Image (cartoon, rainbow, N blue to C red; front, side):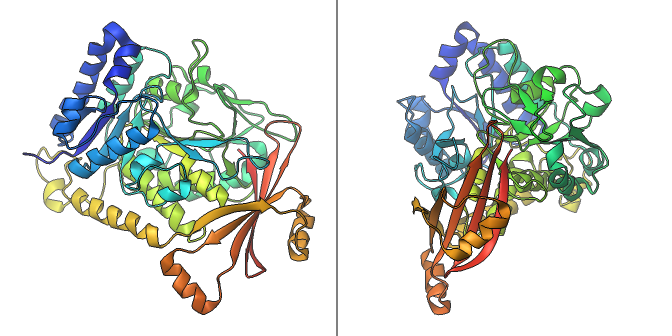
Amino acid sequence: MAKTNKLIVTMKSALQDKYKNDFNFVEDQLKQIISNDKMQRGLTTLLIYLDDATQMKSLGAKPVTTKTSLSQYKASIDQLCNSQMPDYLMIFGAIDIVPHQRLINPLFGADDDDRYAPSDLPYACDAAYSTDISKFIAPTRVVGRLADINGKADKLYVQTVIRNSIKAKTLSADAYGKNYFGITAKVWNGSTTKSLNSVFGNHTQLLTVPTNGPTYTAAQLNALSHFINCHGSPADPTYYGQQGSSYPKALESTSLSGKILPNTIVAAECCYGAQLYKPSGSILPIVNTYFREGAIAMVGSSTIAYGPADDNDQADYICQYFFNYLIGGASIGRAMLEARHKYILNHGPDLSPTDLKTIAQFNLMGDPSVSPVQSNKLMPSMSKAKGAIPHTDNSRIERRKFLISKGNSLKSYVNTLKKGNKSGRVAKHIEEVLEPLKMKSNNGHVFHIKENKTNAKLFQKTAMNEAKFHVFSEKGKHVHEHRLVTIKEINGVVVHVKEYVRR
């Protein structure tokens, strides 16, 4: 029996309740993915209904019997991945079909309005169900979500997004690395300039808001790479720019119609940039509109995201890393996994509360097996073979082994974080750091770092055993006027200071 390369997981009863008489049509569209995977990508793909008891039992997994039980979704998917060991896991449907996992936001309260960070990250990890983000710092699975419209049964939308994914082409790196559509809130011009230089080697095509937006020409939007660093709001089909206290519209869902090319890839740093909310009328969320118009992948946040105004961190890096790996030849799913690995490695072993939220909140939309860029790592005999299928790359077996080992190694690398009490009166050395930043010291929280067993033994010898983060926040009159300062100290010595703003 051929190895199963890819799993498509969804909920049959949820699809039937949503699409009613059109369920068979939707199922037929999903079966077309299976056929295309076999014929064009050399992949053996299974469509699995998580609530089908007979099918799940045959695959060594328990079904989801309670649609509201997040722990059941997590356990069922874990069991499937353990029994089938797929190279790709594709979740089909918006969060009304297969929900995000709800991870507790460590910043919630005075520092942040989001109680949870809705996330697909746990599905990429073999750790057991939990609401603690720090339990999911060792991702090993290549995961993506091909979403329909939350709360809306649009069979033609399903047909369109699946067709766009099936017809996705494997192009040269230049197709994504030379031309791009880049927009930024004007106040973040310095930050976005650094991001574009990192990904594309220049920032000559960067558009600032104001004065650009919210509509753009087809020539501007026809680039296959879209990199967006603007403000976003919950359940809002618009991204916003900023200059001073003015927040003009930067990009609207409706402005994308008829101007997005097939094979487009999007990375959006915006708060709620890829939130799968229920549209109240005919105007779809930006993420759904991008896919309806031709996009095949989008990385974006489900909640409030952060990054510096003039430097790079948090949202900047996760989006940069994704694009860098993708242009390097990774499938969109592997690009996201490697982006998560790189973020955790570069920010660890002590991940701040903003780091943890960033890792959780940025999700990948799209079929994870799609490879938009031709890899230069194909075996010579395959790359030269007549009629070779680009995706049929035997080195994928070695890459998966490497990525699983790399992900698992993070378990003994990253320390955990525990939120303490409100800071109250802070020490003089903390006050001295806050003063030039014009940040008040009476609204902070302390997060204590607990070293894992491996690190604890080492740090006992080096006396580096009292590390913690202080987080201070300030909110203005406008919803987007929100900044954070994180201060890390080890044994009473400040070693790191970073200021972030709400994206």
